[in-house]
Image (tube, rainbow, N blue to C red; front, side):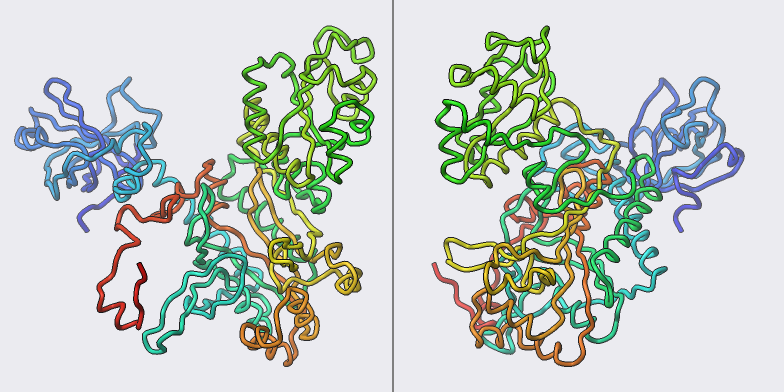
Amino acid sequence: MLKTRDCGDLRPTDVGDRVTLAGWVHRRRDHGGLIFIDLRDRSGLAQIVFNPESHPETHDRADALRNEWVVQIEGEVTRRPAGTENAKIATGEVEIVATSLTVLNPSLTPPFAINDDSPVDEALRLEYRYLDLRKEGMQRNLKLRHRVTRYIRDFLDARGFLEIETPMLIKSTPEGARDYLVPSRISPGHFYALPQSPQQLKQLLMVAGFDRYYQIVRCFRDEDLRADRQPEFTQLDLEMSFVEEQDILALMEELFAGLVESVTPHLKTSRPFPRLTYAEAMDRYGTDKPDLRFGLELVDLADIAVETELGIFRSAVDQGGTVKGFVAPGCAGYTRRQINELIEFVQARGAKGLVTIALAEGKSLDEMELGDVRSQVTRFLSMDQVRRMAQRAGAGPGDMMLIVAGETSVANTALAQLRNEIGRRLGLADPSVLAFAFVVDFPLVKWNADEKRWDALHHPFTSVKAEDLPLLDTDPGRARSQAYDMVCNGFELSSGSIRIHERHLQEKMFELLGYTPDEIEQRFGHLLRAFDYGTPPHGGIAYGFDRIVMILAGSDNIRDVIAFPKTQSATDLLMGAPSPVDPQQLADLHLRLLE
């Protein structure tokens, strides 16, 4: 070994020891004779002192050192002089008096500073990712990722789960997003697909008798990207036989409560995790992934709205839509510019507009008159209507009601995101809190108006609730599934379900989704045949592992917790992928590019 100790491990108990350290020059300081460097490795920093009186040759060589040079230091651990200790680092009570210095490799000047957290353009960070990964924040995030992985593996192993790998080259089957396809050289014109998830494979493992399976697995989806989505991502995938929905949810609550307590004890969560039905989540928060760290719940105002003279309210209800809103506490003093920003915010999310009703301070709600109300639609409202809306929404003096009228799904989307925006502006969400919750009883299918067919809301292997099975023949849109999500702080972390395990029910589901008998056989014949051989009842759940680590790290971008991520346009700036390939490679695969 080129070193006997790690930089971040030295403590006062090591004073007097002779050590050999190796790492990067994090920072260099020349104090008129003495030269100091902070030497960095993965474990942390150690201060090195070069003294011209005791070791003049070593001191002279240190004069050439610059940031990010890789060096080896030999010396003696000593206490720092009184008053020079650095409480900000673990090694701040000691320093090493260098007796020898070896330069293992010099460095060019990096394109951005490694030794501070000043903002850096993300494209530049990703182009020089190997340098970006040296920064303290990225080192911290990837260490956290390792600890999360280790905890999950230990937890599941202690409960009888087996980690089983599944193939990366599989058959293309509909999973909800576009597949990444891999052409076969041996079978011209045929393709593998990279797995969007191991869904069918883990169900086949249940057929095979491995009743507790898990895998931390790479998955691939060719879809538009955003801050919490990548074309290749990591999934915590697990499946269990002979279980019901409550068994899986209870196990997941135990897993994540323990994970937070053990790995990120500075964060707070509480048990039991709330359980909301899909209908309840949409009604109260406008989304199936609500941030429960603050209130601002939506309320239905349609019955009061139709009594007003406001046309947009009345027409929304007449056309089968809704009028909903929530209270922005203490925001009655918002300026016209601020209100216009909120209007533009909801319009960018599909809403036609936003009605604001601000209640002046100084009077109780019962004492207020219309002159105490500031709104762009006051002339269409009576004070009784304003008062009833405020009472239902929980608004009081100094508050402002934010109301959207229109098609229900559009209103929910706009209000859900506006609720999050107001929560952010008002600082209502405690960053130290992880508000986990389960959302259950999702609809089984949704109508695809463009294709004139039913689509599975989760995937076609999700089981319907037993009491709703007759609805598959009469009113499929009302049928509820045995599907469930786990959400946290406004993010969907996982999706799972109790699966269909009987062939006739799986065939019925495929038929409902519009597959012909030939398509069913071609795409799913292998699974249906397996169901003929004694398939146990089973269910499972899959977590976006990158999102989990992102939330635990206090970030809002999964690229901050992935070693080598892609950009928003799915490009690899470090290696230059995707890129053209040699024409001979295309010829070997029997492929030809079209202009």
